[in-house]
Length: 183
Image 1 (cartoon, rainbow, N blue to C red):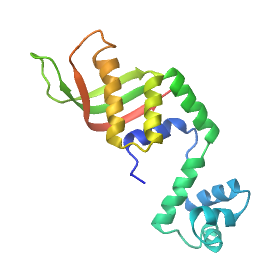
Image 2: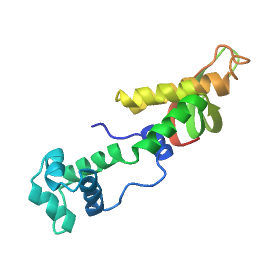
Image 3: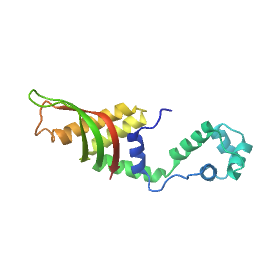
Image 4: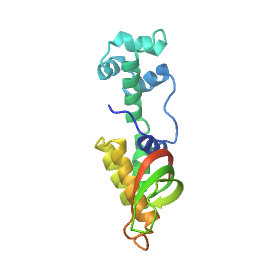
């Protein structure tokens, strides 16, 4: 699995109303509860023995880093599925508010500057941008590919004001400081 980028984490933050359990025993308890009390099913899902899952539940042993990562991935994948579906549907229908601090690079018409500049931007983006971001995330797109999607959306909706100005301008994100998504 590729490391999660700032955009993936932003999408996940907006989808969650309650954070996932913090400790490994709490995460394993959640997985066991979801498997209707079967430590055997959780063990098969994680590729470990049933006794290992029971020890994790008790807290007598800690999982190795690879197992801890698998546990976290399984919890994240199944945490609040109804909330995630509603949030995604709403974002794809109504769009979302993007708060971003990034260094943008430009190429523009002659007589204007194309020096990269750091900007703090708050912009509402329509549902088609949300659909494109979710589709890219679902397809396993890299952080750079997701940044290109956001840069294109900001280029059209913020810098060009939906085609009313800055005709020959193209913008790209050179350095993403932080971002926050809001519905």
